[in-house]
Amino acid sequence: MEKSSKIYVAGHRGLVGSAIVRRLLKENYTNLILKGREEVDLTRQEEVERFFEEHRPEYVFLAAARVGGIYANNTYPAEFIYQNLMIECNVIHSAYKFGVKKLLFLGSSCIYPRDCPQPMKEEYLLSGYLEQTNEAYAVAKIAGLKLCQFYKRQYGANFISCMPTNLYGINDNFDLNTSHVIPALIRKFHEAKINNYPYVEVWGTGKPLREFLYVDDLADACVFLMENYDDELWINVGSGEEISIAELAELIKKVVGYKGEIVFNSKMPDGTPRKLLDTTRLKNLGWQRKVGLEEGLRMTYKWFIDNYK
Ligand SMILES: NC(=O)C1=CN([C@@H]2O[C@H](COP(=O)(O)OP(=O)(O)OC[C@H]3O[C@@H](n4cnc5c(N)ncnc54)[C@H](OP(=O)(O)O)[C@@H]3O)[C@@H](O)[C@H]2O)C=CC1
Ligand SMILES: C[C@H]1O[C@H](OP(=O)(O)OP(=O)(O)OC[C@H]2O[C@@H](n3cnc4c(=O)[nH]c(N)nc43)[C@H](O)[C@@H]2O)[C@@H](O)[C@@H](O)C1=O
Image (tube, rainbow, N blue to C red; front, side, top):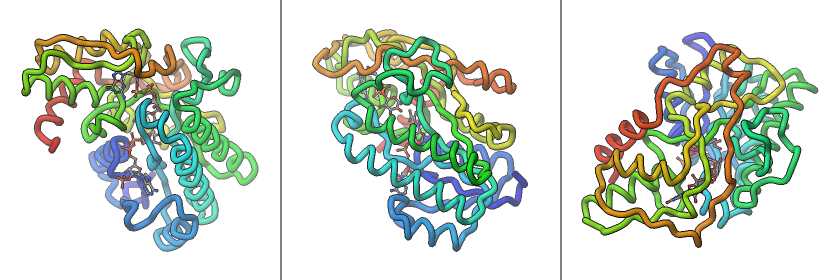
């Protein structure tokens, strides 16, 4: 990418999209195309084709999607599969039709089988049944990486895919029904602290293990891959470290400074027991994450206090 290249960040207002914009601006890529859904609804093919015809982006970071935590995925599967399939098909096909030089699609670590050997290698895709709570989203994400793979194979389009682990950071979604675990617990512990609630409810048993990556590290990896990766095979992006939900809750409780109790609600789903990514291929390319979990949690909590209304 040249500093003057026309770069479209789809989903630029989201957790990931806004981090990619921060990363690009820091490196003086200033010719960014940033359009919200009120200007182009990416589920509408005609709107997307008109947008690409008018703006002719050279590079595309496809970070727009219908995204949510375990409860949202489990509650709205039709919306998750439909909206994500439409966004992927429309953006990836228009990128091909209007000659985009390179596109990076963001998938997710939940594409791998629920009982996959750990850590999960890229080659393990489709080797077993998916986790039920996010099957709709996972099927859409698998279709997205396959679209990139086959458009590269048949048309020679330079479209690549990365599969990030669970992400968190500033400008995340803190809605308690649709968010992921870290923003949800930051908000729950904060509200319990300022209101003197006796306990905080954590969903599930606390036993599942999760891997987390700070969103600015992910954004750095996305720019790195756009510059250095051209393979047909999708590539995992993770921190290489996992933690149980119970230990995560204790860590967030410490970061927030809450003194009350933690109560587990086992009526809420645990989801997949583990999903640690094998990031050997990315490491061999020379990329490493920089922000550790406690440091990332402290930065996210500070942002939450300063910004969340
Ligand atoms: N968060 C995580 O833990 C992980 C996320 N990912 C992937 O990263 C990508 C970004 O996720 P994240 O940033 O967390 O999600 P967010 O929900 O924070 O952001 C999604 C963005 O997509 C936009 N969008 C959604 N639907 C449409 C539409 N129909 N037309 C136009 N824009 C639309 C939203 O716009 P608006 O602001 O108007 O709502 C929003 O800006 C996704 O592909 C996700 O699958 C992968 C692994 C983990
Ligand atoms: C990111 C990736 O992975 C996502 O799946 P997930 O990792 O299961 O999502 P999650 O972060 O919502 O939950 C992680 C764990 O945490 C527990 N948990 C405790 N207490 C709360 C709580 O208060 N909220 C939430 N959301 N979870 C909680 C929860 O019960 C579960 O055991 C996909 O949705 C999909 O988005 C995807 O691509």
